Image (cartoon, rainbow, N blue to C red; front, top):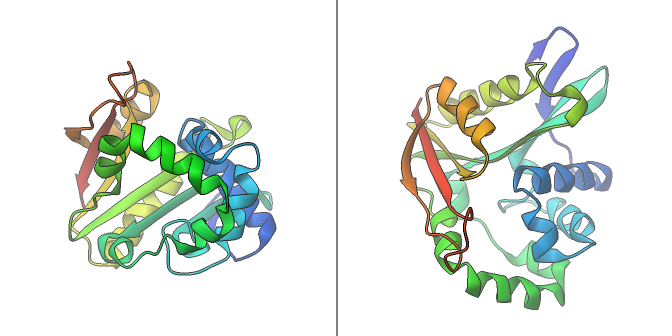
Amino acid sequence: MTSESVTVRPAVATIDEGLLFAQHLNVAADGAFRVLLGRDYDRVIAEAYLSPGHDLSYETAVFAERSSRIAGMASGYTSQQHEQSSDEPLRRAAGFRMVRMAAFSVLGRGMKRFIKTVPDGDYYLLAVAVDDQHRGSGIGSMLLDYSEEAGRAAGCGRIVLDVAENNAGARQLYKRRGMTVEATSPSILRIPNTRAYRMIKPL
């Protein structure tokens, strides 16, 4: 998919793209991956990204390029792909950091259960992120268009995503694109602004 000098293309399995995938993923998750995995989160995710068959694989990602430079990323998968996903690549890459992840998982188990649930027949959009200098240029919409088309091509009936309660800008963008709130996650130990909204759109 192209528009002017912007191209959206599937990711490839290289460590350099894995690092960019990790950095965009962390931005989309409001820094959660750095909290979970520590300072070297990008190298951990990049190593896992090289392996097929899981939610953080290169297989799930597409990049938007402007003038041959990566300007944004989206990652998504079908409910069937999610069901068949293995945590092993991330566990192997994380090593001792899994202890840290496990501790956070206990604190936020309700949130984790909410985010990890992908109903049958849905296409789950894990992340959309556009670099600061390219925001407002339509790249986010191109990535969403690409993701919706990927969902339709896979035979999915809906596209779904989770957006942070305090990310009003993203919620407004998704609302303008016809998405509606279907459910609200529990907060993490009643900490304010830690809920997420699940938004959906028929395809």
